[in-house]
Amino acid sequence: MAVDKSLNIKHILDYLFINIIYCLIVVFCVYLQYQHNLLKWSGREWFIMQRHTVSSSRIDSVGWENNVLEIKFPGGLLYQYADVSKAEYDNFLNSASLGSALSRIEIIHHYHRV
Image (tube, rainbow, N blue to C red; front, side, top):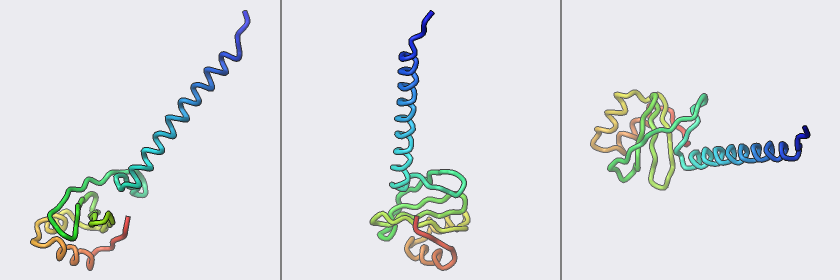
């Protein structure tokens, strides 16, 4: 009983091709999400910070997770502020002026551009 080796090789190559294409699509999607600030690297894992829009001329949207305050400014700049407690975040959101409240946060907390 003879086995057609060319048929087996063709199946293997088809399988490899499909898996390579799948991997490239996944990598490309992760890249796009990262480029558009939808996906972040926390040092140990990928996560998506949920932000919501606010009524401010200085700030487009804000989010808070794991004591990190994230602020997106008009024009697309994105900054993260470290060690911001939930109470500080709530006080920030409830302040009369988000711009003034942010100025106080910038004095107290370390921040960096994402």
